[in-house]
Image 1 (cartoon, helix red, strand yellow):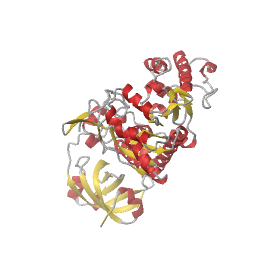
Image 2: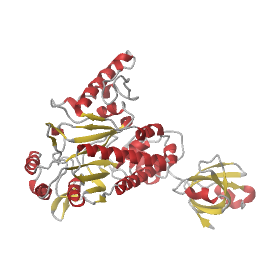
Image 3: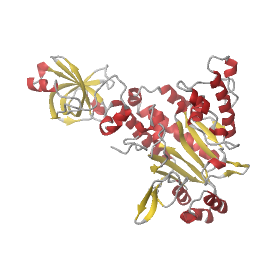
Image 4: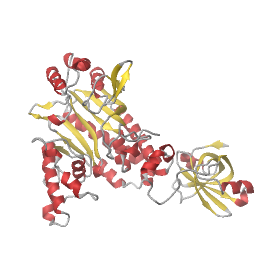
Length: 478
């Protein structure tokens, strides 16, 4: 008898097949068992009829607990009520291991996520957790295909590094045969070497940040996609970021319909991403828009409509301000406050990103941040060196930054000054500075956080749900 996966059942209508998996749920009566069976590729109903089954077997399947491992054999028949379009009429079955005390029960109550994370190794079997991980898999597949189609070479960077990439305050230090080494914050610096050799490369691997943050957007271990391209300048970086995200969203919409439905994700918002060009906003325009949003939010939603209209930035002129549904007074007060620090401005805060993203139907590309708040290797704008030739991409619906990138500084002496200014060990960057001595060219790229993209596409509340086993300040197991 042929063993098939649930995802392939529709190709075997009228055939007798074997399923191997686990009992997800069960309902029925003294005459029928409606078994919900899962095997990792999907869920299907298997109907066991008492009149056609061995009495002992029928009784056994009426008592086993969820997540018991089983084999089920029977005929695949059409069932238009099923999402798969089929069900299995059971002729025989076998219990491989009976479970009585599975620690996660099916309930309508909202589960405690911290308790579920304690048993993450089991929680990931649940339909919604499985759906998020499936979307993650497809995001990775889409990413690899996007860069493959465009002639990029995969370029692996080391996880152990002798130096910081973006500052020393968020490094994990370890001992390496008696010498201090660090877990990589980014593969970008090594990617620059790859771009000089191969033209266009993409680094894809784990990165580590020791920031002491407990927000829903932070992990200490996560995966980054980091393309780096010789002769690519800021406009090209923006184009590459937009094209890659649109490609990924379109791919997920095509391959993950069942998963998005299981998560009750509003796919109209994702379809709008594919249909619209991404707005591109200069940092100074973001400042202006944030101050307008703060004034509107503080006055409340019951004010005159004319007072709620937005300035003419990226097509917003005359449109009404959109309010984040769960914006608190504390968050409203934070809007625009970080961005006005130090005279010229500072980096965006979470409240700023949320407020800006709510006004658009696609990711927002904010470029030309003040150079002083960005990494030492970002190139200054020759027209106004107070700004860097950089970009952050903010996801819609308040999901925050998902991409950060820039042109790279090519001036050797200026880079030496910046390394010293940031109190980084100059000797650790000898090889990096060589790239500016031997055939330097304009070049650039960005880093895309896989988990943040998955969090956004799946509609998950916390980035912890977007990786199989999350690592945070307070979570190191399972």
